[in-house]
Length: 84
Image 1 (cartoon, helix red, strand yellow):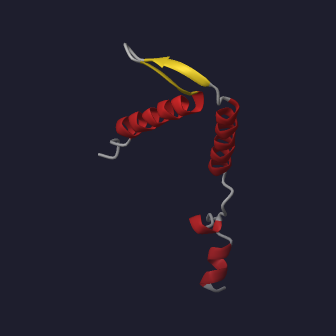
Image 2 (tube, one colour):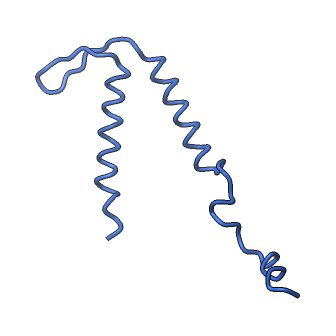
Image 3 (tube, rainbow, N blue to C red):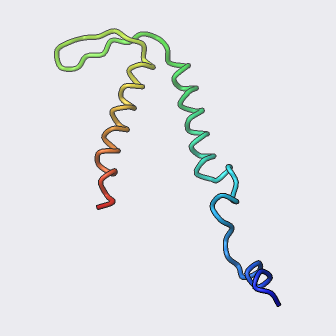
């Protein structure tokens, strides 16, 4: 029996590039992204935001986007340094 036949049925997983695009993590990310977009487009009214003293009026989606970006930056700062 040749080596290629032995390796073909030895139970090894396919290489990363052969798995395809639709992994469970990518599907979940896509679903969450679509839900976030729907939430943003449903909340377009203007709101008053007060942080300590100043008061600002802006669309709710912009305030939510700002908080999301701050969360991403905090997560990157806290969890991005784990590889040491």
